[in-house]
Structures are given as C-alpha cells and as structure tokens.
Image (cartoon, rainbow, N blue to C red):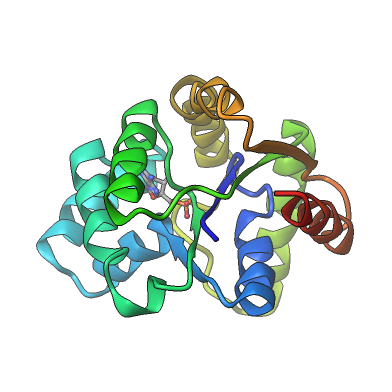
Length: 194
Ligand code: AMP
C-alpha cells in the first residue's frame, strides 16, 4: 500500500501518518523530517536547506526527488510508504509516478486534508505557547509569519497537485479540523474501499 497525505502545514498529516504506520505496517516518509535530520547533522544539503526552510519556501524539486528516490529503495519501505509532505509540486508528483511505476508499486490512495486557515493559525499559536510554558524547543519555522508564508506557498505551488490526483480517482477528502480519531476513521473507511 502506498499512500500520499496532502494538506497544508499543521493539518495533521504527521499525526495520521504515525497512526497509519502502526496499523498497516507502512513506513512514513516525511521530507520535512528528512531535511531537518540533514540540518541537525550539518551536512552540506542541511546547510543549504536551513535558510529556505526557515523562510517557509520550498526546497528545489531536484533535491527532493533525489532524496525520495534513494529512500524508497531501502528495505524498510518494502511493505509500502506513507508520503507525508511529498509531493509538494506537480513536478514532484510526476517524478513519484515514474518512481512507483519503475518499482511496479502502484499508488493506493491520496488523502487530501481540508482545513480552515484561521483555525490552523490559532492551533499553531497555542502549540507554541504550550511548548514555551513547558520549556520545550520551538521549531524555527514555527511562528505565525512563517506559517502564513507556508500557507501561501501551499496554495500557489502545492494545491495544483490536487486536480492532478483527482483525475486518478484515488483521492479522498477528509476534514482535517475534525478530532484525530474521526480523521483516522474517515481514512480507514476509504482504505477499505480501495
Ligand atoms: P514540513 O515539515 O513537511 O512542513 O516541511 C518543512 C519545510 O521543509 C518546508 O517548509 C519546506 O521548506 C521543506 N520541504 C519539506 N518537504 C518538501 C518538499 N516535498 N518539497 C520542497 N520543500 C519541502
């Protein structure tokens, strides 16, 4: 099973990925997490990526496609993958189609998280407050200005992949503002039918 989760930052893709990973024995591939690991390890890629990530813009398609191409051939991806935060452009979506066709592993489902942007900003601000109160580190791109920039980037560069996947008949819309368990239920109901 290969599943794509599409939705703006803060929509709950990461939370649902973790749940689906356990329930279905899949591997979550989050390009954001992979990039943050590069930043922490201070690799050349990480050093280049940091400023772009902090500004809320997208890393170039070539780098991201290359990163995923290398990752999906590893043994822990053999049971299937949950793509979280990838693809984010039509170019990336087309590249993923090619990679999956080569591996003869078709796409099973595309889950589109629908959200209310103002509520997302509210959620982020309360998450930052809670983290600060409990002395936890706050991600450099976790602030309202960057979130608004990331939402604009999502509308301009990522939203065009929605009609691309709609045309495949594999896409299901879920209400990203619903409670976590309800979102999981909506996704599982859809996965049973594909
Ligand atoms: P995320 O954790 O998925 O919200 O990603 C954090 C940041 O990493 C994004 O704001 C982008 O700068 C970068 N990033 C993650 N995934 C991608 C992708 N598929 N394409 C381009 N940039 C990405």
